[in-house]
Length: 331
Image 1 (cartoon, rainbow, N blue to C red):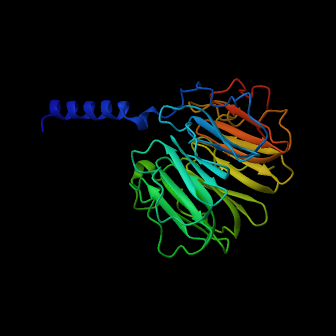
Image 2 (cartoon, rainbow, N blue to C red):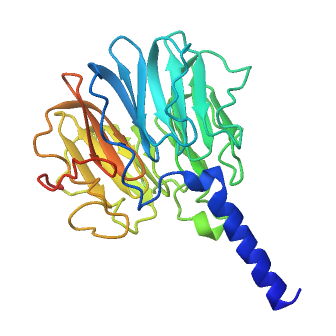
Image 3 (cartoon, rainbow, N blue to C red):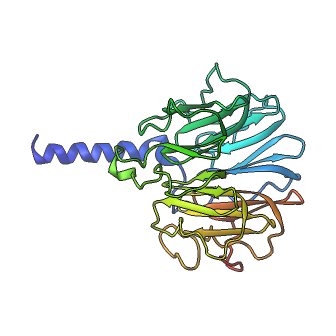
């Protein structure tokens, strides 16, 4: 192949990628679409989730509300959905777990990430990655579907019963009943170097854990004693757990930042979007608003963060919101 032909093919490939639905997902420069502006009529909520450019919440009555970037239908909540108890948001697709344990998905579906397996049993948890989806059945079995280009949808045969799951950009994480963590997909020695940052290599000396989360290229866990451990890519300080962080009960990870919910209900965030990590990925997503009250849940999108206060109100900061956090602080 001569150099001119090679250059032309490369140009065509780049052009095709730029026009694909996948390329239409929110990027660092996309800070509009009302990502962080909850609908005015949003009532008290009990659960939240954040995707690449969209946000989702479950109201106390079980109804699901979504807003923000909607190029692929990720905010088009099915009219027949019914009451739900959990939600998850991928880059451009959304999952909902109904109160009866069934899973419903909608949005971008090029890789089958919204095609819920017909054999899926009653579930107790769900997770959404870039182009893949996960569900944890009531019996502890993990089920995955969607894109498997890095092995993220190929469950290890030795996994066993689990109590929690998390989906990163191209990797998957599961927390076994015994507190040990298993991860697969991108980030192990035999995956492509462009996505291999050790996010699937479990941190050494990690003790039994009670919670997990997965970001773009990093993984975070809460040990049984409440301490937080993180590993994987660290270009924006996303795995630099603050020394002053107290015992935590929940985690959320975005593209390049991490959010933690301490036992006392206060929220702490670090990585991209903090005053000490000014970069191309900075949208103030790690600057927690000073007026944020005690919270019961958190979520992290690609470049925005969410918190659910104890009174059921949803607070969002970072990309796509007027609440840039400039009056807040990074803890």
